[in-house]
Length: 136
Ligand SMILES: [Zn+2]
Image 1 (tube, rainbow, N blue to C red):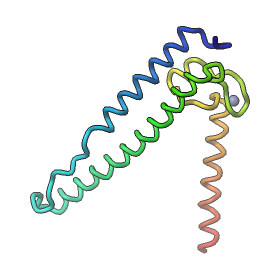
Image 2: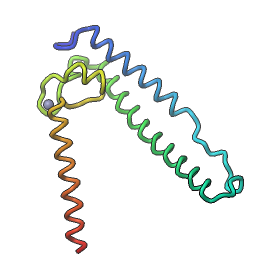
Image 3: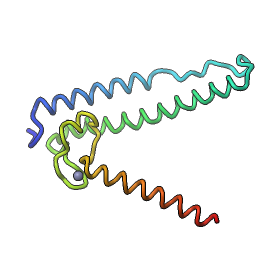
Image 4: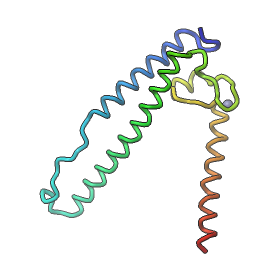
């Protein structure tokens, strides 16, 4: 029994996680377009466009792989310790059901996530400024 998520809400999230896992597994089983040989496309721009498309496919696949691992961790957690699921790892409050439905892998409430994103943006800008200071 979960403290704040009702049984049907928890079931909804579990179903969603399972659906997303199978969609990602199907997507990851699709082959990447490798079948064009370099001399088939005489135009160098066509080849460059194809290479770019292939690169995007690899990046997309990598991200889907990360998402799959995150969802599998959530699934494992929901099976082993469902009562622990849905609490913000930063402040400990309940994460809203709407947020968990939208992002089942959410580890933080909206407020904490916003703060983390602002901090990350600040760190990123600061790193760029430090690099520029060292350069000039
Ligand atoms: Zn929080």
